[in-house]
Picture 1: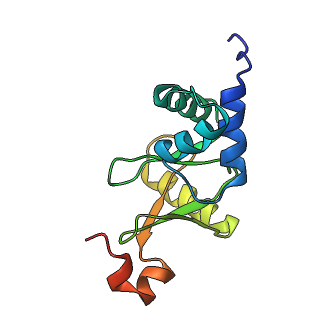
Picture 2 (picture 1 turned 60 degrees about the vertical axis):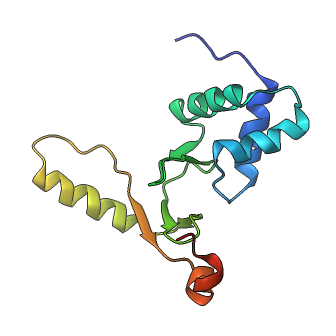
Length: 137
């Protein structure tokens, strides 16, 4: 495979995602990167986000509303999506959870389990304490 040509725009996208914990949408990434590169197109941002996800530099988090979220943190961790406000949060679970899931799935699958991807759904603390203000419904 040929090496990836350096791109300042791609580097800016990667730096932004590495510095934020908000799990932004492509549109949010576009608005941020547009400040540094006013002529960048939304299509360029989408292409670079997909490329970065494909090569494992970022994580793409599909959400029920169809708008993918992106995470610059690529170590093993989980996500919770708030059903009211739509925000995505990191969830830290013990490594034994990963081992348990893979082992249990492997016992039920005639093959080899190599990895897994789990999204949790619920309500964030803000939405639990202020349901009228945060609800999208």
